[in-house]
Length: 155
Image 1 (cartoon, rainbow, N blue to C red):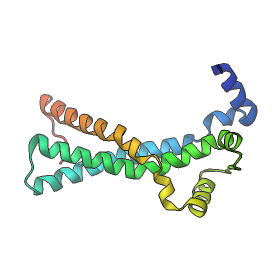
Image 2: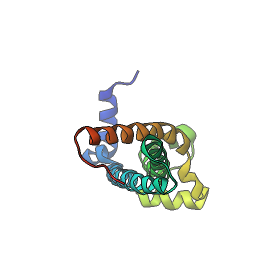
Image 3: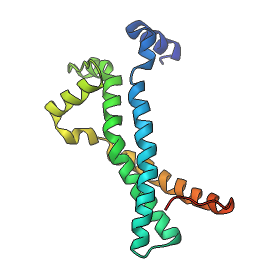
Image 4: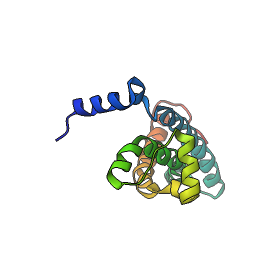
């Protein structure tokens, strides 16, 4: 098998110290989008479901499930772009398809031109299978903790 030392050496040889940070700006952008969309959409969905007559756990569950879906919708293009950028060299070696990008904007432009906008949602369903249940558990637990500590959650 390949060791961690081999990978570290390979990254350093091909990209220097900066190679270890390839895709980091997209990771930070994704974290900002994920947090703001998840919290903001939960708050809005919670209010919407209250207006539809839901309250308590059903309201919180539906709002959290909605937040999970919208979080994936917002972050899938960033995940796709980051993955393409970080794996371009390995993909080219394995597939024989030239996939070299100068940066994240180049990934976006080439993908739009060659594959269309829906390509950015490749892998979105597995992402939702991971993020959806986590988001539901996160907000249900958060609501309970807010009650225990006598504070108010959103919505």
